Image: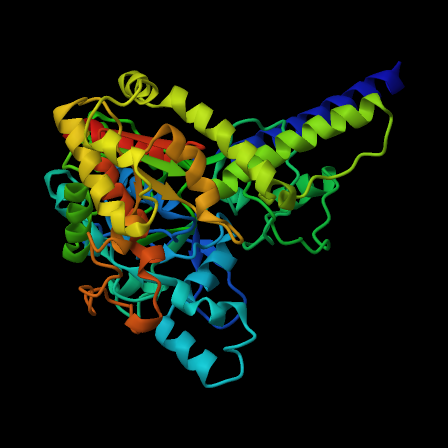
Length: 532
């Protein structure tokens, strides 16, 4: 009997101890923000320590590292504004990257190193004073990208009527707020719930995430060591580099506002679900203004070229913009062909084979794919334009022109005039199409245009307008007006500024179609709705 009582007593003691440990760990997992780390600027291994307290009267900042294409960077800007508004901090905007994009996401330390390396002056010096220029991929890409202030293309005055202050970084020294903090300051605190487990809250504590955690940066308490021992965690295991962001983690502005430090530095903030804000009326109004009024119309050479193209197509609301992402379409068709092939092989019990994209680039297969795309587009354009395009063309200058053999470029301007005349005098619903194509290597432009022209005879590209001398070819009026574009002769301005030119044109169109649809469709739709 005594043994039974002793056993129960030991059991109760062990259960109590285990419960205390469990509650302690749960509290750690669900801390609003577990001891946000302070970045150590020493040359030793990077470490993260509890934040230092600063007088509240000093201006406080937050910033982030940009990544991805324009739409990713735009989402990062929106999320940065949310965080700045709720935490009453000044947002330090990183530069906008044009051209070749950075990776969608990498862990914080890699992203920080990559950010610091985007100094083109130093990169030119390294690449062209050594033998790297011909062999290193980063050196080969130097003329394929540039970073410029957002205010070069966008009017940032929209933020002034909201309770959020926005400044732009002055240099790449992110540890000192891009030039907004004194050089002797070490007041930066790193917050990145997508990289560091201790930076966020867990939505589902029972989920076993397949992750490779960042090394532990702070001293481990005896209680934590015992907990780790009970969970059989081994500190001696060297963590592997993270391949993807942590899932089901977020940082809340109600947590971040408690951090009294001069600068909060985030990694990527393009993923909205990783940051929870108050969703106040003030925030909603701010984001609505960003969506509706952030137009790249603040750069004169860009707006002049867009205006010339819009006027050449008949003026605002007189044309439809069609954007074809050919690489994505080919990938989609390749996947469908692959699926069909595997289904046939399963029925015949054959070994599975793979479909190469080269098959789709073969003339007959490519034509078949383009015909399918044209059929799809006929169902996507506004119904009044679809009906008008399907009807026979009525007697007009356009009909006379199409009945003649006018395939050479010399008659192109006449076709454009005939299309505008037909729309103005005969059928106001008749579609004039401005085509944007994401090109691929080995692409025959005529093979793309032929099926489209059969349904839409009044279809034109920027290249057409340039060949016909209707608009200026190139960007000769650009000069040195963009900071960072050091060598005009080697920069591909069509690649760097083309997407923003397309946005300005699409904003003045009758309708905008994009296939496959991307986040750009929603961006243009919000602008279009505001100014229609």
